[in-house]
Each structure stands twice: as structure tokens, then as C-alpha cells.
Length: 273
Length: 273
Image 1 (spheres, each protein chain N blue to C red):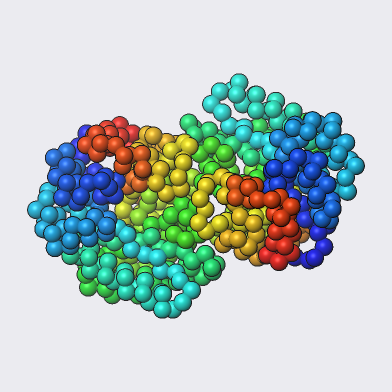
Image 2: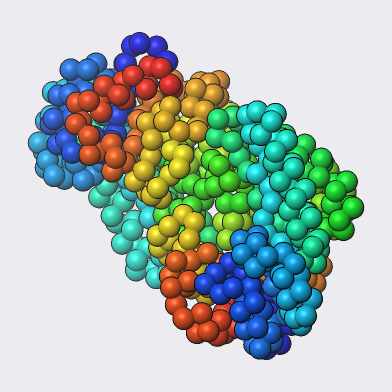
């Protein structure tokens, strides 16, 4: 990766101990180009204040994270999910985020096939409001270890099929190396996402060896076994020109001095991505 | 599942607190048809004694668990792995097990593609000794959350490709619902395994919601989100007539009174499988 950090984006949750205001100051001072804002950070700051901070910052808002969780046994719960996602589109629009990332959800009491149908129906219901708010939607396929409750979309092939079935410019895909690195069809599926103009976002981090926690033990690029530069080369071959988004949930990294951690992120971005 | 337990097999590790002798007594008294013997249990008992116990028991030896771990950076380490697997074939033959289950391995310092090549080479090197000992080999695809160090074979499609590439009666596949339940191609891949006469073993348990530990928090059938009866119906449609093997690693279940746990296993087998 080049020395230049203009295409580096950091997710607010990566430096969770920092408030949105602090993160923006620190990222800007380091020359980081973008930020993806998690709802917890935005709501803790207050949306009007978050909007003001982001508008005044040289750091660009890349996405708002995360909507989704469409599948439920009852129609009422599915309606609630659509309503909650409309609200998240409003919040994204309010802070100036052009994209809402979707963790699609899964209901362990029904088949993954049924959950996928409900995901498609939920996303299609959101399209009019996505158009009104000018915020697009990115389906993020999640690792199969999250198929019980977090997402019934567990491969890029499934995300491609879903995005192509919906076939609307408001709906694309977020590719995250953490979820997809193991897939032997990844290169061809990334090229397919690109060819179909569905590659909306690219998230990077690493899979630590060993991984001690299924959720909060992600590694910095170079700390684990994912060949990030190789996957990046596929994403670039697919025509992607957006941000490289560092999204790391890690008790170990959150416990560090966050100024020091930010320097580690910059080094890992330049040398290991 | 029928009341009859003649096709029920339990892995010795499922009731880990029991010695091999105790497990055999308890399984036999309950009418359980088969046992798959883990190496730790066999070596703790001593192979000659294990052989005697198993020969005298009405419980049939279904498989020996587990060989594999073929990929390594150095040729020397790969040679050692082949030698270790030959020894495990000898051990399996000594206790009368007709099948050695393979957890194929993965080397995080190289690509999964390279690890897969080394797995194929390692298995092919074992075939002569498998023929001599009369012990067949079962490739067990593992969940993608184990792709870092435990197995580069993470889908049944990959296991099918590998078994078909090797194309030898001594090499087949073990299907485990824990590793494969999330895969939207599972039904067709199980039918493919059957059609190619590669379906050598079928392991059952459940995926708990939530799962607290990546290795030792498996559930009993019915405790989680896997539709075991549905996957069993695919395995039967594929022509499988072997044992239903209960393989559970669980700190929670190991902490229980094992007589009580055995009764739970029998009930879950009859009612939730």
C-alpha cells in the first residue's frame, strides 16, 4: 500500500475508547482519509453534534454501521426491523454517510433459506427510503461461524446472488477479508461483484492464530493468516476505487494506548495491506 | 430416529471422563451399537488392553480418531506427519477399527491452496499402508473457523473434489453436521459423496446459540440450531447405511454426571436426530 493515507478509512469501533470527536481529531492529524461511523459513537455524541463535527472535519464519512437483522419468526418483529433500518437510513443521512452497512441477521429457529428470503424482502422494503435519503445499502456477508444469529449470508456468492436478484443501484456489497478469506471461490466472486457494479465497500483486518474470542479478537493486518495484499489485488482488479476500511473489534487492541494503536494501524496499512 | 440403538455410535471423547473400559461397559449396557475410539483413550488404556476390551465387547469399533495434519512449511515436518499417520493406521488396525478419520490440517504461514496440495500428497502417500492394514481413511471437512490451523478442507465440495481426485476405495469422507450445516450446497454435495461411493461416516451434534468456545462448546442434538433430521435425511437419500456417530466436545457436558449425560444422548438420538 502507498505511503499516502487518503484512501485509508478507519471504523470508529476500531478505536472504541475514543469519542467521535477525538477519533476525528486524531485521524485528521494523522492524515487518514475516511471514517466509518458506528451507531454507538454517533448516538453517544448526539446526531446533530456528530453531523457538525463530521462536516467540519477533513475526514470523509464513508459509511454508517450497522443496520440489518431482518429475519424473525413473527411478522411484527420483521416490521420492527424494517422500521429500525429506516431510522438508521435517516441517521446515516443526517451525519452525511452515503452508505449503510447491513449485517443481515439470522433466526436460529428457522432455516437459513427462510432467513435469506426474509433478508431479501427486508432489503427490498428499504429501497424507497434509501432512494429518498440518498443512502445506499451494502450487504456484508459474514463468516459461517456467525450463521446462527448474525447472518444467513455467509459467502460472497450468496451476497452476489442476493444483490443481483434485488438488482437495484441502491443495493451493493461490503467485502470484509475477515469473513471471506477462507473461501476458495473468493477471487472469482470478487470479480463478479465488480463486474455487476456491486462492490461498494472493502474492509480489512486479520485472523489471529489462535483466535481466542469469536467476536472481539480480530487482528491488525499482518498479525494473522489472511493474505490481505492478495485479496486487495483482487478487489482492485474488480475495479474498486473506494476506501480501504480498517474494522477491528479487539479487547486486546482497545486495551492499548489508542495513540500508539493508531500508529500501529498506519504502519500495518502501509506495510501489510 | 427409531427406538433401536443399533446404529448409534458414540465417540469416546463425548464421554471423556470415562475410561475406554467404562465407556464400553456403559454403552453396551445401554444397547449402543458402536464406538469411535479417540487416540487419547486408546493410549491411556494401552493398545493391547484396548484391543482385548473391544474384541470382548458387543459394541462395534466404528473408527479411530484422528489422523491428518499434513501441511507444513518444511519437507521434514511433512514427512513426520506421514510417519505419524502410518503409526495411527497401525494403531487403528491393532484395535480393530476399519476407518481412520482425518483432520487434514492447515499451515497459517502458507496459502490454503498450498495446504490443500500437501494434504492430497500426504493422503496419497498413506494409501499403500492403508491397504496393508485394511484401514480406510475418511477426509473430514472442518468448519471455516478452523481454516487457520486445523483444516484447509472447509466444505464438503472441497472434500468431494479431493476424494474424487485421489479416486481410491481406501479414501472417503466423514460428514459432520457441526462443520457443514451452514452450507447452502450441502444437500447436493452429500448426494455427490454418496453417488461417488465416498460417504464413509456421519457425525452428529448441534451448534449452540450462543456458542461460547470455538472448540469445546458443542451441543447435543436439539440443543442448538442445526436441523439434524433434515441433514440425516440427505445422508440416507445418498445411500448411507452406517452409524450415526455422536461426537461432542463440551466442557459443560463433560462436567455432568456421565451416566446422566448418556441418558440425555440416548433421548436426543431418539427424539432430536
